[in-house]
Length: 123
View 1: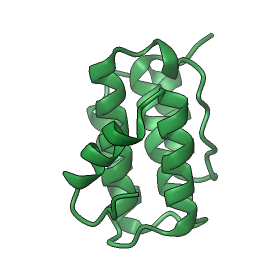
View 2: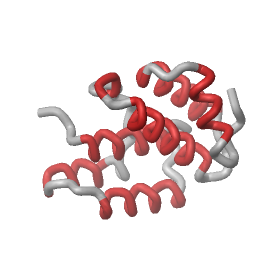
View 3: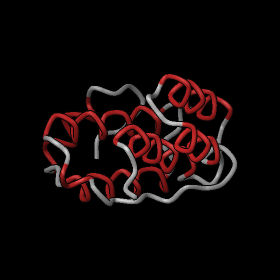
View 4: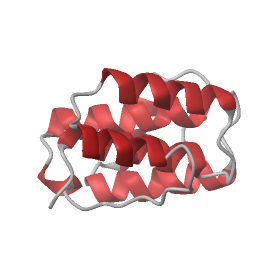
């Protein structure tokens, strides 16, 4: 069964948080808030909580089907997660590029989004 849109977004945030190999407390806290506020059934909530314990890889399934606004929102949220610990590691930058490509965002659109997120150096 495919993830709900909420679980997909949480999975992307988790992948971004784990991209540098470490889940910082600020990142874990943000994920906990996101999980508690999301409309998830119990099985999805349990799965989302598991993202706090084990490294998550980016799964681009279903991303192409999102609306343009949703794609921009997902990318903006990923940029914010990358900058949450005030350091965008090379591995996080690489994941942003992979996500940008999976979402089908142009380089210009990605740069515009990144410019609006403090702490993210525009690629």
